[in-house]
Image (cartoon, rainbow, N blue to C red; front, top):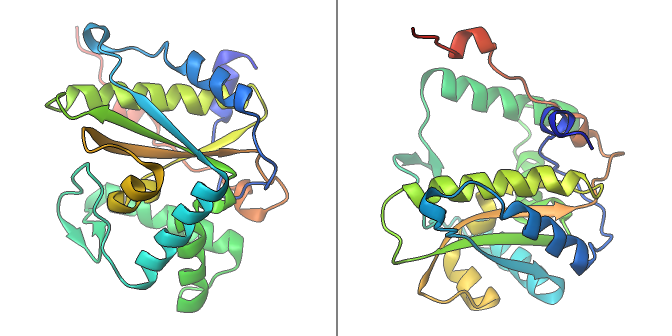
Length: 227
C-alpha cells in the first residue's frame, strides 16, 4: 500500500473477524513500527501481545468490571471525569458526541435505548471481537510526558503497518481501563507502566459499523503560517 494512501484510508475498526493473525505477521508489524521517531533514541516501548485464553480472560474480566460499575483507572491520568469518562467541553465535546451519534446510527441504536447502548459498550470492553490485542508499556523509571509522545508515534506506525497485511486496528483506552486485571492476566510487572492497547485483526467489512469514516476539521482552521 502506498504510504499516503495508507494514512488517508486508515480508520478505527470496530468489528473484527475471529480469524487469528499469524504470529509472524504481528512480529513484522511490530518490528517495522519500532522505526518510529524516539527522543534521544529512548525507544521506550515494550509490547505484550495477548491472544487465546489470556485474551478471553481479559475480555471477561473487563465486562465484569464494567457491569459492576467500576470506574476506569488507566495508568495515564484521565483528568476531570464524570461517570468514568473524561469531561470535555466546546468543540472537543462536539466531536465526541458526533462520533457516538454516527456509531449508534449505523448500528440502529436509538437515543433512549439504554439496553442496546450498554450492549455496545460491552462489545467495546471485549475489544470488538479482535483476535489479538497489543498492550504497550514503558518502564517506570521514564518520568515526564515526552516518552508518552514516542508511544503515540509507535502506535500510529502499528496502525499504518497493519494495513499492509490486510489487518485493521483500533487504538483503545478501554483495553487498559482496568490495569490490575492486566497485571494479573497478562503478567505485566509492576516495574512497567501500562499506556495503551491496540486491537488488531482482520476487519469484518460486512459489519455496518466499519462503514464509518469520521470527519476531520478543515485544514484551514488548524494550520497557522507565520513568517
